[in-house]
Length: 292
Ligand SMILES: [Zn+2]
Image (cartoon, rainbow, N blue to C red):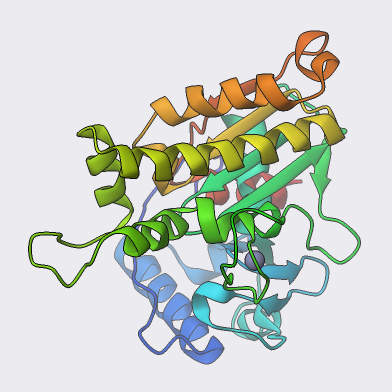
């Protein structure tokens, strides 16, 4: 990122196959070294290094406690591991926390003091911005709405809990529902990923439509409860599932208006809008954080 919060260069990397903390740190370090070489920027010119990651972590200590996508379930002093390699300050933040700050500072939630960023992708999560600042909670784990219960019946979530929202309503959850209805090993069925569920629903398949509608109902209830509890004025929806399907935002907005306590949507207004900075909302947010 440049001095004005503009993106100078972007590289997309894959997570190392063997994603141990050491391997991920080495991959970040390697990518950054190559980027500095390519752009001719000396490493001494780095003012800060910011990372956001889909994990339950403590911003103050930089320790990651749970990163389901990386299969990390023990505490990892991730920021310290990176800090050892760099003289500039290193920031480590949860991806949704960084994204809400990005959208509030530069994107779809500009000017709001009480906002949330919600990602609907492989999993579901939220970043909270309350009373003009990021709200992380007592241990740093606030906003984990993907693990609110109880939705559906009898499905184990990646967190170990039963019937979490994301076990049913995330992209992965919808694909799991599809796998219960159709036999993927049948050549005519094809892969039952999230896109296939939406394609089938779009083509008029009532079972696929019921999977999508059920997921949007569960997400709508969850967001309505957030509005009832926090009296938010803006919810920004991001993540891969929502990004390519703008109609979902309208569906979610209807549910929030239906289920939230009336004054929270009638007297106060709540905007439900698509993220504007994706896929860089997190990077922009952590940049805003580093600028203070
Ligand atoms: Zn869970």
